[in-house]
Image (cartoon, rainbow, N blue to C red):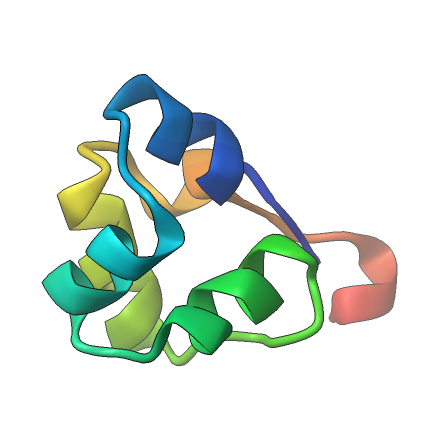
Length: 67
């Protein structure tokens, strides 16, 4: 799965650490999400999208291999 988390973080001048604190996870989790190495729970995807003021669909790009 690809994400636009890094792009959206840049819009709000948030570090991985700051975003992690806002959604209640470790910085490493945000890093793994950005690299596509971790599939978030629906709850985490929702929290990240809320903080970054966008939709889950806009933030996470699902590919055929992910389904």
